[in-house]
Length: 454
Image (cartoon, rainbow, N blue to C red; front, side, top):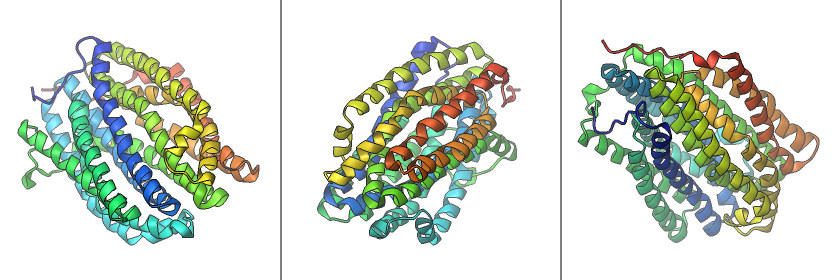
C-alpha cells in the first residue's frame, strides 16, 4: 500500500470521520483566511474601490475554481471507490487522466480569459469606479489558473485516497506566504488589487509544487514525467460521468452568485458591492466547517460504497450532519447578535458597514439550512449521484436564488436585505427535493459501479 493512502472502509466510523475531517476543517479554515486576507488588507490599505475590485474579480476566478473542484470530484469519488474495492491499476490510470485533463484545460481557459476580461466585467455591470481595479485583479489571477487547477486536482486525489493531512500543511504554508506578500505588495508597495492578485498567484503556485514534491517522494502512482501525461478513455468517461454534473452544478451556483453581484451593483453601487464582498468572505469562513465535513462524508462514502459497506456510509452521513448543524448554528447566533463586529473587520467606511449589516442579517438564515444540504449531498456524491445533485442545484439556482434576489431586492425595493433572502429560500427548496429523493430509496443504488480488481 502506498504511504499516502488511508483506507476509510475499516475501523470505527466516528474516529475515522473525525480524524479525516479535522485536517480538512483546519485546511478550509486556513483557506478562508487565505481568501479573506486579500479583502482585509486591501480594504484597510487601499480603500473601497480596490476592495470592490478584488471582490468582483475574485467572483469570476471563484467560478473557474469551483468548476475545477466539481470536475475533480469525479476523480475523488472514483479514487475512493477504487481504494475501497482494492483496484490499484484503475487508480493509477484515473490519476494520470485527471492531471493531464486539467493541465490542458488550464492552458485553454487562461488564453480565453485574457481575451475576454473586459467584456466579462462589463457583462456583470462592474461599477466604473472599480472597473480598473477589477481588471487588474482578474488579469493577474487568470495567469495563475494552472496553479489553481493543479493544486485542486492533486488535493482531490489525496483526499480520495483518504489523506487530508498533507493538503492542510500545503495550504497553511501558502496562506502564510499570501499574507506576507499581501502586506508587502499592498501595504508597502501600494499595488492595491494588482498586489493582492500577485500574492495569491505566487502562494497558489507554491502550494502546487509542494504537493508535487510530496507525491514524488512517496512513490505516488503518477511520477509527473512528460511521458506519464496520458488520458485513458475509460477513466475519462467515468470522470465526466461523475464529475461533469458536479462541475456544471458548481458553475451554475457560481454564476448565480455572479448575477447576484450584478443585482447588487444595480441596487447599491460600489459600497454595496464592497459590503457584499465582505459578507461573502465571512460566509466562506463560516461555511468551511460544514464543507469540510461534507467532503469527509463524501470521501468516506465513496470508499465504503466501493467496499460494499453502505451501512458505514450512512452512519458517516448521520454523524457528520450532527456536527455540521451544531457548528453552523453557532455562527448564525453570532452574526445575528454581532453583525457589525463582522463587517468592521473589512473596513471603516460607514456606508459599507451599514450595507453589510443589512445583507448579513437576511443572508445568515441560510446557516440554518445549509448543513443538511451539504452533508446529504456529500453522501450522495460519494455514491455517484451527481446527476441528481446537478438537477437539484439547477432548479434551486435558476428558479429560486436569482429570481428571488431580483424580486425582493429590485421589484419590492427591499434592497440588500431582499437580495440576502435569496440564499435561504434557494437552500430550502434544495433540501425539500433532497428529502423527496431520499424517501424514494434511489440513493441506495451505487451510480458508479466500479470494476473489482482482477
